[in-house]
Length: 344
Ligand SMILES: NC(=O)c1ccc[n+]([C@@H]2O[C@H](COP(=O)([O-])OP(=O)(O)OC[C@H]3O[C@@H](n4cnc5c(N)ncnc54)[C@H](O)[C@@H]3O)[C@@H](O)[C@H]2O)c1
Image: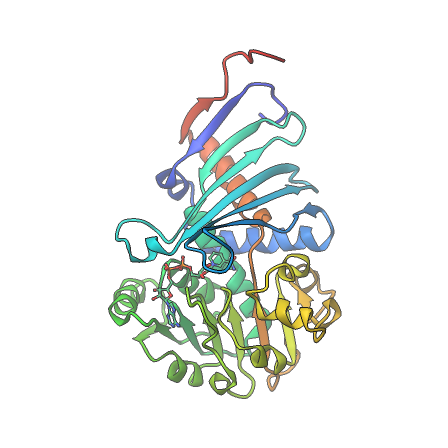
């Protein structure tokens, strides 16, 4: 199919990506790890995302991010994720906070060959990155974790940490909205051999945990040093969650992608870079961690901090896996850009 000049596009709506196996967290974790391996080897072109915030950068109500990439090596596809979030959606039943579309293109003919709902891909791949970061961040034999934020990413984070940290016995699922945390905990309790305890007291949960993962829509930092216990690991998946002193206190800092991270002043790492307190040498990027070129945690008494912003290459890699599976299974809807292009 690739390199054909046929303009056919396979459209995969959310129900199709589920049928094609997207909810298999083990597989998504492996795909995410492979993405960072290719990234670490320099085989992925992934320019920092371009953001359009509405009505303005300071007081945005919604935003659209453009996240293009080219993946080389044995994959050889291009693509883009068009990612959006809306504060209004957070309070509107029936619509997710974040909504995304993923487009896969042939790098030679430049024809798009698959368009997928990217909303669930985002949730699965984001939490898989959280799970991967947790592996380099959590102390050995981690049995307790506090997951702060029981929204969409919070749900998939339960799947990711259970897969990535097999020693886990207890998860405190924290949210300002306690009934929400209770409902999610009840839903996931039967799926994993881990006790899931809902709570609205995130700090108390963090103080009882060896691993803390935050995935909230907080607009101001709420995690300060008083949340940390000796030797704990903290993974922050969103912006504006941690005070600068938390990052300053870290013995090891793991991030997904330095070049992009420093473009975003909502991230504590970017602020410390701007202030001249942190350089690329002071962090371990996921590509280097996966390849073993740099280390995450090296002893159980370190405080390790990790954070991510997400790269389009993850969505394209996961989307391509789904495209291949859906094609094999004969699912999805075929559409065309044209029968015959008017001008060529
Ligand atoms: N790093 C990445 O690649 C990446 C990708 C996608 C989304 N995100 C980020 O993840 C975050 C969560 O997204 P979502 O789709 O799950 O949103 P969501 O609206 O579904 O859930 C967010 C939850 O956080 C809770 N919350 C907000 N402030 C809190 C606080 N101070 N303490 C405890 N709970 C709090 C809310 O009550 C809500 O239940 C967003 O900030 C989003 O931008 C990151």
